[in-house]
Length: 262
Ligand SMILES: Nc1ncnc2c1ncn2[C@@H]1O[C@H](COP(=O)(O)OP(=O)(O)OP(=O)(O)O)[C@@H](O)[C@H]1O
Image 1 (cartoon, rainbow, N blue to C red):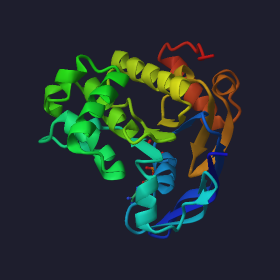
Image 2: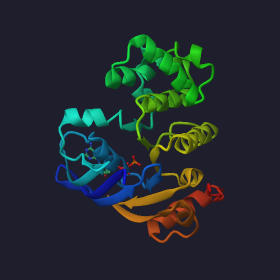
Image 3: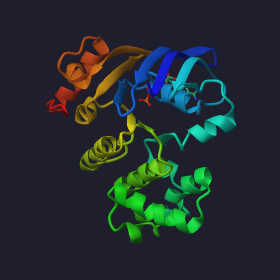
Image 4: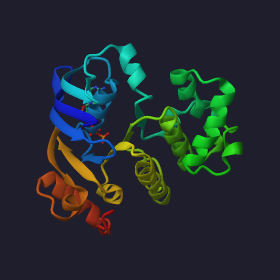
């Protein structure tokens, strides 16, 4: 088991915002996490990454490759985060520094985690840029974030998350800030990365249509709890929990038709 979360409870200011969440993820597996806004998706993922906001308290167990992460010190956690578990957030602009070149930023995890010399790290950045299908990577790494499109910036953020060779990638609404056709390209990229490298992927979204494109299993969250887990196909075609039914209904109302990734 790559990741095993058991009875995770997160409280903020005396309020329980994640309420006994349990789930597992095998190596190479992809898991969608879906639920309405405020259902606890992000805080669950932030707990796994040890990035909960100040004042939040987490209990339960988060085992990553059999190692307990909950409660370990920040130094130990920092070597897991980035190197073993990569992160991609919704808004690429927040992940990127506007005054440093893209190549410099993609290479940074290699310098931090492996002490790679600047020149070597930069050569690696070009390879990473090419692996996330950024056009003309040799030139692109010299540019600054504002010189790229939104979709290209998110690909840069993905390249950064992959730089240190993590075995798990957590992507929290990674396509929400992008328009629909660009979204599709990013989803295809995740699909290829999982297929090609055996990476495990947790993909957080509120969009059931995106989950259907990703395939794999999905968790449905409501009020801080997991209310349903199963293959995306059954979630789309035969949702049982009212929240899952509502998500499927809302997607169908947009004219979306469920063709689920094999
Ligand atoms: N820093 C914080 N301080 C206090 N409450 C918070 C904080 N962050 C989140 N919450 C609360 O915790 C609950 C769960 O939030 P969370 O961000 O995990 O939801 P989510 O399912 O990811 O929603 P969204 O889809 O909108 O990102 C919400 O009620 C939210 O208001």
